[in-house]
Image (cartoon, rainbow, N blue to C red):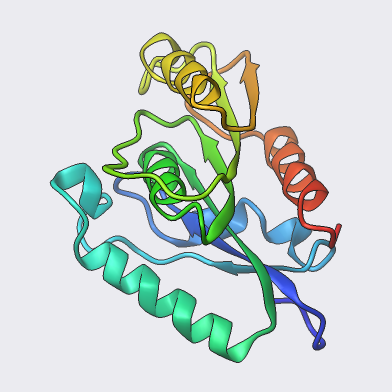
Length: 185
């Protein structure tokens, strides 16, 4: 957690289906102090995020409460949302729906986005393994990214040789990308 009174970027970190919250935090923890990232990783109410199982509900309420509580206790300059797998799909969805709050979205190996409406203009960092057997790239990111670009969003897209995972190099690249857009890096 960043120390001092200088503003930080609050980063909502979302886990994949069936996972715990801690790995979502661990993905960015090594760079949190250096880049003044205030990381928060809620656990979904069910095995995955509410929108994936039928619409916004308890997970959005939990996230709203966390963001309200943390922004009341800390000097927050900006907000980002990150996620892996189902968490990446949820990050894309939340980022599009709440683009007036989240200015940046990091989606590692997303499957889809389910935004019923869109606000704001967040920027996106999307990465996906070319050998992903869980969420094959041809049916997911290779469709999602062009659609975001066609809608005028600023998208940084990284394809890498590998499967359904987030390497340390990808995590570092995403953090540097985050820092490049917030004036705090």
